[in-house]
Image 1 (cartoon, rainbow, N blue to C red):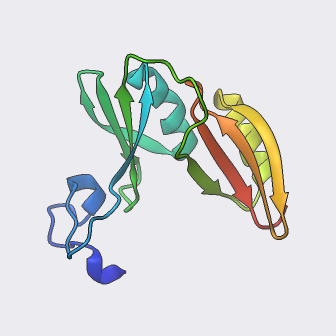
Image 2 (cartoon, rainbow, N blue to C red):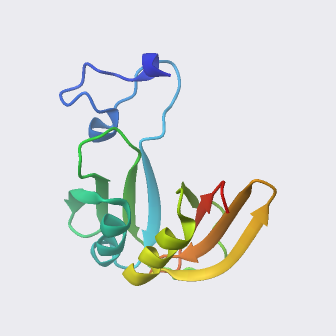
Amino acid sequence: MSEDIDTNTASGNPTATGQHSGDRIGIVTVTIDCADPRGLATFWTEALGYKITADYGGEFVLLGPASGEQAVGVGLQRVAEEKVTKNRVHLDFHTPDRAAEVARLVGLGATPLGEHAVPGLSWTTLTDPAGNEFCVGSTNG
C-alpha cells in the first residue's frame, strides 16, 4: 500500500493535506455528527491522543494525530438533529489490554453498552459523550 501514499505533499502526510495519489479514493477522515463539535473534541482528543488540526467556526472540527504520524483523521460535524438510533457505521479500535482501555475511556466520559465475544476476539461496545457507538476489541480476551 505504500505506493498509494503521496509523499510529495508539503508534510508528507496525506491525512494532513487531504490528498491521495493513485486511481482510487482513500480514507482521510471519519466524520462524527454531533450537536457540539468543540465539546466532543475534548473527549476524542484525549481518547485518541489527537489534537485539533482545524476548527471551522465550531461547525466542523478536524482532529489528527498529535505526534504527526500518518493516520485517519476524525471530523466532528455540527448537525441539528439528535441521534435517535444505532449508528450504521462505527469506529472499531484494537488494544492488547481491553479492560484497561475501556476503564480509561469511561473515565473520559464514554458509556459502556455491552460485552461481546466470538472465538479469538472480544470487544466492548461504548458510546462517546454524544451517544455515538464505537468498539474496543482485543484478540486476547
